[in-house]
Length: 265
Ligand SMILES: Nc1ncnc2c1ncn2[C@@H]1O[C@H](COP(=O)(O)OP(=O)(O)OP(=O)(O)O)[C@@H](O)[C@H]1O
Image (cartoon, rainbow, N blue to C red; front, side, top):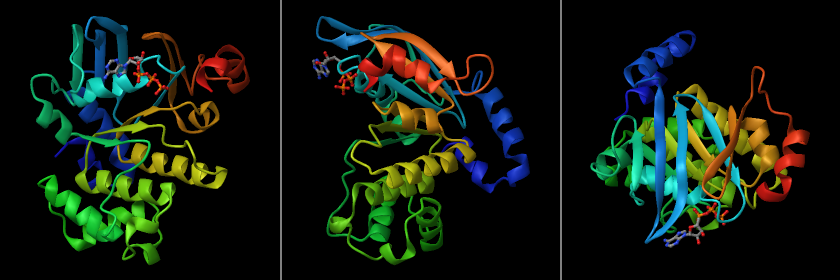
């Protein structure tokens, strides 16, 4: 169980301070940390000295053209791709040498969330929590489903009929119930209508408030600009530019679209 996730038990006014304490424990507060990573498949190098550092309570959107290496970056943190050089850490844990331990501190939500179709939303979260070795009490599961924004009327419905947005809410409820310090998202808003996208973005705000470090791979520049604290642009395995939501490098969506629209979209 991650320390950062315990932020939920900290009174709201103290959470920022709590995050700063946790940040100091984890070397600069980088829950997701890749330093000078070179990685690829077989003899082919895909990531070229990638540096990516994401703090507790930060939402980072990674954009880039098809084949730029975005999914490979997620696979690095999941321990499915081994770097040829450089260093990767998840909550201070090396996913190469301790993949199971690293994954215990991560939730990964793929583009299409896979759930047990014949089980209800509540049953899915309970069962998947059990599989993760973290059985939760029913009250905690309901609280997670509520925090994820699933309508109470859907808790006891089989997920077979759920939309993509509802499935994501179940997956996020599971991440909240597991109290993971880091969340990886692959194309979360593709196929969502504008209302579901806005709802999803609000949900990411809840994760931020809980101190979760979020890495979101997306082609959706508008949504990234709406919700992210930082946006990074990957091109042929290199991070071309990083822009922030605040300060001097605050992002200007129009300018970003002019520069990267053709690549990101
Ligand atoms: N398992 C694999 N074995 C060999 N090559 C792979 C493998 N997975 C990805 N690649 C190659 O690595 C490169 C980067 O792929 P990756 O999926 O990381 O890109 P991406 O930025 O996520 O692209 P997209 O936006 O299309 O999902 C591509 O050239 C791809 O063909």
